Image 1 (cartoon, rainbow, N blue to C red):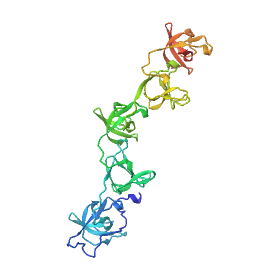
Image 2 (cartoon, rainbow, N blue to C red; image 1 turned 90 degrees about the vertical axis):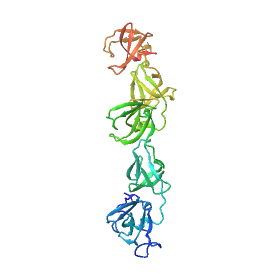
Image 3 (cartoon, rainbow, N blue to C red; image 1 turned 180 degrees about the vertical axis):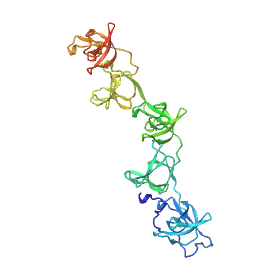
Image 4 (cartoon, rainbow, N blue to C red; image 1 turned 120 degrees about the horizontal axis):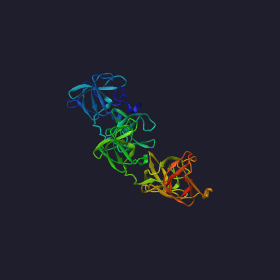
Length: 410
């Protein structure tokens, strides 16, 4: 622990200034003991200990906060370690206090600063040993509590503004942007925005755990009241919330202070291309890696604004199964897909006069019929065959079977 963050106990620095006396009992001209005030902020302490004797090893009989008033009734005396002590009276009790922590003038009170990181989804703020994000962390200061600033203004270091502050007798540094001058409200209203996490909402659970029972799904865009933030079993931060009369916990990462962007509800339908689903890619490009295949018929959220790549193709940014990526607009529909789509047989480009209809999606299955080129057929689904290729399930002249998807065209 650094010298800037020592607790009161056993680590008080040497005295520099002390109440002075000509000897004996310390009295004013009126024959009354002199009044002094506790002012330990300059030594990074929140107050002073009153002890039974002049020394750090003497038993503590009282702890007085900064600004407390007491009477000095004795001249300073040494108590070892270079410290000066004076005999004092406080609430009809007498003892000894360090002389350098007392002053004849009442110290100027500094306004308390409050920790309020509920809206950001954090359980509190760090008290750092030095004004640097690479310095050791002394303690986490919880939301809602106050800290005492040692200076009236912040300092600038390591690219941040910092307050030198005390919390529970520990001195250190807190980033100024994480503190408030007014006591925070006990309830903060936030918005649910699960899209960035690949979700259409947030689960409200009975406990701060991914294994806890789900009370309800709170949809994206809904407002939710947050009363606190706690650490969950998964090591992540969970917000304690109230929604629609229910109280529970949700992941802090899906809550935001701003309303989320509006999104569309679209349906994956790549049957017209002869595919089993729509590829979700990392970027709006056919060359981008595929994250997952979204099966045909699945409903997915997409941001209302589309993206066009260098080829002029239209893409949507969509969320699916906890992932966010891009899907071709060609294979996304605003309505739930029909049970079948009509396609045309076109084997000429591959040198075929048509396509074989088979009872199973593999080349070893017997041929039920040859469907000539230019024939229209109804496609109900697309599956992957034993050969790893896509096969379309089609209806032809009252027969149902499978045809190679590569022979079908719009």
